[in-house]
Length: 524
Image (cartoon, rainbow, N blue to C red; front, side):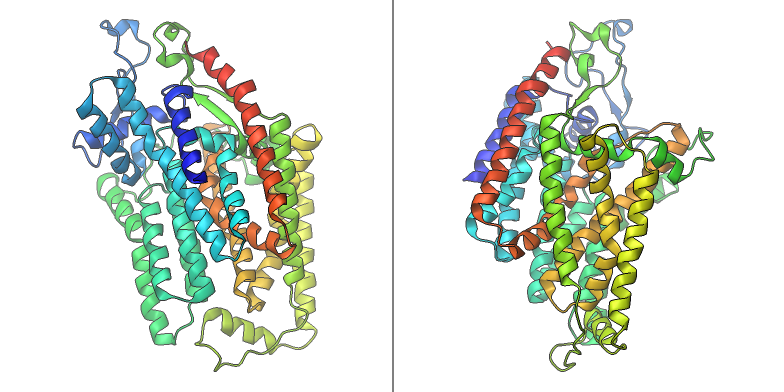
């Protein structure tokens, strides 16, 4: 019922609140859907265009229209979401010629994906042992992040990807806890579907496959067999898409950008992060970023078109979100600290089939008594050095929340990562390992995302593509870590309820005070 209500909320936003084209890159996403619905199943980057009559009839005199057909950069993405969205679009087009319905029915895929993602997360938390009410409340919380609810009302692959990653995470949790091989292959199947939706999921595929191979408890010959099988299934779609790019463009990672003369060839990663508000923009765009085309799709205002019109919210609702996130992050940090083994116990090798984690755990158990405490102290010291260095050198916005709170939340995973690796290597508790996986997979994606942002900065000379929504597909595994940590401190249902109420009130305030007035300002 709750998932259905959340999906209905997204449908309402899609039909009556969010104007067409005012979801990030919605014009490109919609044009891709229309290409597939018209029989062009695999449009090529550099040939596919975004027509100037996508949302409204183009002026009969081309000179009157500043919006010309342009290359559709969105076709760099694999096609699975667009094939799914082409179904309601084709049905609407067959039923009516009214463009209003074509657009809104195409948006239904994202709305339904969010409702289904909430259901999948609920099932995941039930498998972790949370009470029913707790599972409902925690799973529902994602639907009240304003950027996420905004995207769930649009033509975009982000929410469909979130659903696929939630399904992969559900089966990963089941595999880690129960060692059912079927769950490992189910995880791999959902991962390859995620990889057939967006390339940002490819990092998750690598991380999840590594987790499954580390966890797999079977004799070594069967381990090798399943390692090959799981990897082939998980990487099937990315391998196909890279091969397609190589055949058509000569490189497996082609995204339609030919490297021009570098604007800042000598800019290092540290210079980039110390001079640009990169992490602040990630956080604020994760919570509340709205708009895109602005005046450009309104005939009465098209003469004012100056490109994208976007706004973000960084006041009380955003600060409240940071405080909730900080509280949960501290609980996870405390759980990791408490999970450090006080002494290693040698496992009985006949107790279970061999696995990589059992082999490493037993190897550490055979070390001298002083080794593990020394390793733990070294890990904490290394994490503290990284944390302090980052706090001193990274760009920080003025103010407590936008500055110090954002810096703390950004650097906390760096502080915990070395100790988390030690805990992962030394614990026999599967739930404890799941907590570490959430932190480490998130950190892996964050590091590679920084690398890509830095490459763009060197080429263009300014910060581009800093979108918090890219982290939405990693929400399921991060929430798994949070759920286990919160469960360990006896976090009660009423506590979950109060957090959800705060998120709902903050989202409502954001829409009423900021989002709807903004859309009214840029669209008649």
